[in-house]
Image (cartoon, rainbow, N blue to C red; front, side, top):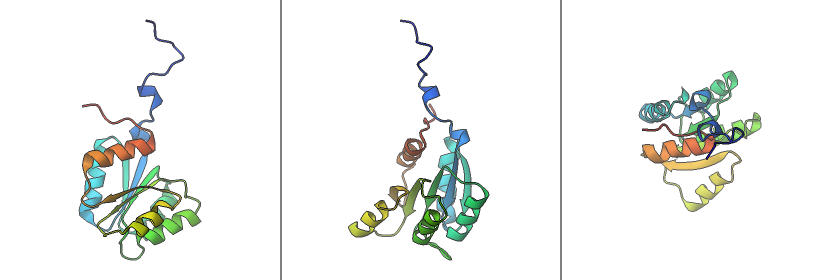
Length: 145
């Protein structure tokens, strides 16, 4: 069977992770390092910030393709950070929440109503599920083993 020249291969139908920037906004150095390790291991570019204020500054420098943010941070927490994203015209940037906070059903429901929240993960995160979610939301293919 001949391959149709107009049909893209699987590799061509996905964006390259190397072209995508993930911003990690978390005051926990261990979580920032873990998310950075997972994302860079999949080939993504990564920038980090220690709180919402630093995250907003990083976005002004370069708009990321995806944001991973904690909810509880000093100076500016995750809720305020999300509101700032929407106010700054960045409500289309997908956000994955990573939190150690106990969230009740109404809080989870409220977060899911935010325009750009696409996933909510509880700490500790599982690397395989986390990297799969990143690829799904960025339209990229996981590295082949």
